[in-house]
Length: 267
Ligand code: SF4
Image (tube, rainbow, N blue to C red; front, side, top):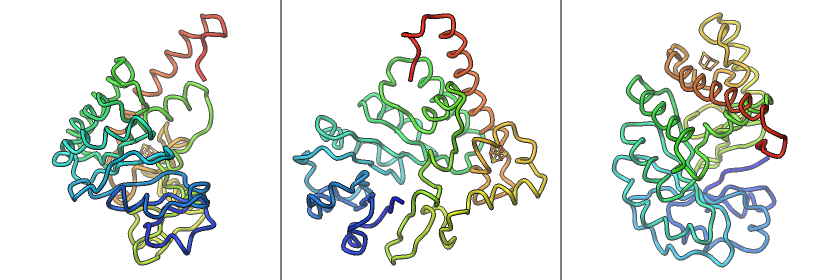
């Protein structure tokens, strides 16, 4: 199990695999020791608009996830965080809200990995996601992964089982989010929902029983109702176009590569 904890709770969770989060990079480095580093999955930096503190790369290049809240306002801060890239793997997590496309394109051009936090996007945001998917699939400027695109593409390419809940670090069977007050949650968007190992399976079963959109959805095996939270009546037509684009690209890639010798196949 991985616990995503505020750095202030480090003593309580010292023996677990950890994602450490703080508002500033130097809040993280102040709490690092050999024991913590052994269990550190990555560090998360929030509050990009606040004083970022010292952004000097640390002596050990642990992975860093820079989490945006308001990409339309925060995107210029990415230039400052780019100085970590020489010695740390750095990903930028971007909520799919107005302005996310501009932030994602800047992050890609600066060579950050990107993770999208899609929520339940409306039509205009879906169009921006599709345009970003096209960029990811067809332009060499995207040298780093864009999640969830990358994991979905690879799952369809290899014809392997995958779950969007796991890809997005929101499956409580594997990962828990510890709130500032110590409550164990699934993720911040599941405020007041206690984390339970079987949450994803139980939620997917409920959606199947309701015989609504999920029941006949061709992406259910991958998605398991991921986009039906928090509003179960959210219409998935747009998000299905995004998934379809990724699946078509994976199938096309596989067919193309099957006509080449094996050493050219991707892993
Ligand atoms: S894409 Fe929408 S309809 Fe399809 S499984 Fe996911 S949440 Fe359900």
